[in-house]
Image (tube, rainbow, N blue to C red; front, side, top):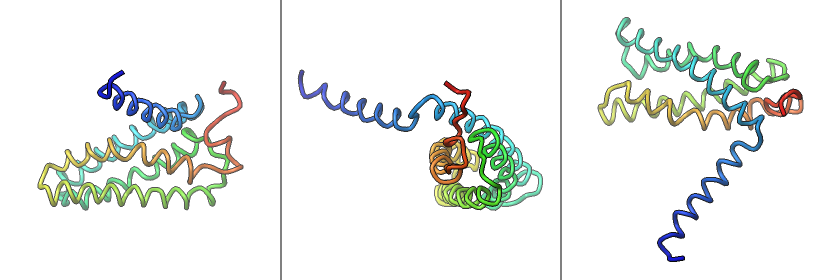
Length: 163
């Protein structure tokens, strides 16, 4: 084996360890798929609201993005609570944690928009595309480890019927 072949194998091994850790078991992968489905729906609502606020109302894209994010918030919370993670927590416990996670997401989302739209002077839909690629994995981990992980849950989305 020569030295040229070692780095790609090492990188591949590192990536595989990360992927296996991220999807530690079938129930985590299933939870991520459910999370993605809710996320796609909330993202569609977000995108439609964003365009309505920019094109219909005439708001600045960065401000309109904040409004659109808040509209999609309730879809995300209830979808992830009931479907993605199948939480058994009381809403009084889960909702504030989800709100904190959403604020983290909103901060990252708005920062991305501000950089791409205001600093780089690119179209707001480029910023929107960047956000929907970058944020979901980050938000899944935050939701799984912080928001919906508790002894009251079926181990963060796992159900007894899943193999």
